[in-house]
Amino acid sequence: MIKMDEVILRAPEISDVELLYQWENDKSLWHLSNTITPFSRFTLEQYVLSADTDIFSAKQLRLMIDFDEKTVGCIDLFNFDANNKRAGIGIIIDEKYRQKSIATKALAALIHYCFTDLDLHQIYCNICEDNKESLSLFEKKDFTIVGKKKEWIRKGDKWMDEYLLQLLKKDL
Image (cartoon, rainbow, N blue to C red):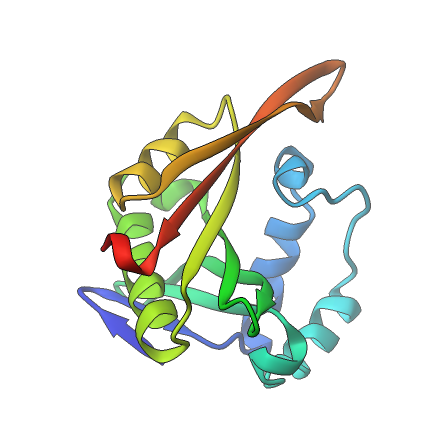
């Protein structure tokens, strides 16, 4: 468990499956994770049951975000690369808990964990150009836009650019 400010980042539990089911099957969010098919409860239960796999072998880590004794979101490390000491980050906050600085606090906790406990050299994220809230969140935590992938994400019949943002440990 990782605690910072009023936020707790913790491993997923079976009791989280229903929330994960809702978030993973929210079609309006699929473009964020390149998902094109729904997840079953069974698949999510199996994922949670195997979530104790070490990040060094699984190459990913999902942590649930608790705030005020409620589970309000999750934050992920993906494409974990121990050799090059880097990982990607993704975050989702349930719609009813947005605009309360929870994402900022959760991201701060994960950044500290990445650079202190995992001894990473860098972390990065990919954010669609129209996701102004996420761009603001990551830039507020000192991530820098280092690239732009043109027409990278398809939303309906429209193509969107996607930014690559990066934070190096030495820049903190």
